[in-house]
Image 1 (cartoon, rainbow, N blue to C red):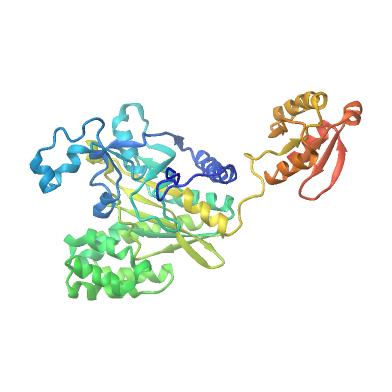
Image 2: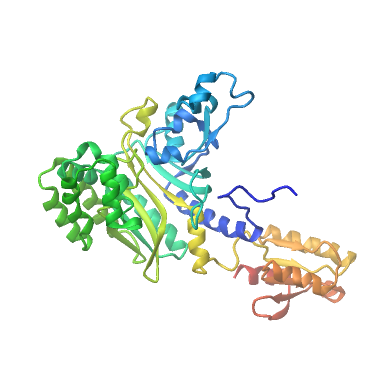
Length: 455
């Protein structure tokens, strides 16, 4: 028998799962729209040259390559095949599945620059693919829900990102901690410890501190050629504990008169101070000195969001940052942007584990009509039409099956109301209504049914 499993790291979604996923997407989109973000979509695949070199060494390795169609080996020399030269990949694969939504967005901005009014605010909800090792909460195909503002240097955009995060997760009933740092601070740290040329290596290693611990981070730094003297200077920063105000004071001393560092302190202080006044008590803002987010294109503020349920922080469920010249690599320099991405699949897992999904959503059937026979079914079709026109999701069982079978169908599909219309109800112009949650039964008119369901 053929292997009927999905590829590793991918999943099917049942109707019940799709209802919950759409609840997340609808919630996120509703907030995006409130802040003036406009929808776009980009293709699942991009030219490889668009994606490669934008995510750092580790990111590039995780990009799914697509073999050229037809005889993809026809232009490859025997020598290249035998030696497995690095040029082989570029010769047989000119396209790749998108790794994120930000780089394709930068490509979109440059390609459509004459049609766009800047600053341009867009949202995008689409799948991305990464050739990562599948594990709990990490998939090879997953959805991102992104917003970006491009064409503005204002730190008010960073503040708005925090507000959007706060509102999205407040609507989802998830308390979160928003960790904030600034790549200027990280660049200054590299300068202060005497390793400015190793900035990328330092950030990649630092970003793993909470996952692998201090000792392994230090070992990785040594493997990347960072001297023991530089690592020793980095340890106070890695070990410092304190609240945001104390961390800022520590940085002022640690970075001294370093110009880049002072600029980073000023930026992060402004974002934290302004945003704190605009968000709910459910959201905790925190300066994280080791937060790096290993994507090469970030240049200013960086964000990471974790759920904070019962004092336990999850893995990252949202993240983003400022990029000052991402469009420059496509020939449109000096256009700054900032964005944040919500990981729909990880948010789903958090809501599922904490039992935070609503029992019914706008995607669910709200009223189910039992089919008592041809005459009754024809009558009910008119009632169904009225309910649907009132915005109520309604269905009629297609066959006049046994009552037990029809009620089991309604119960298994978590339909909250069952409507029953027999001869007596037809003559009286009434509907027998059963609330499947409470078990309460009543006789109502169509107008009363609509009012009950809407409540």
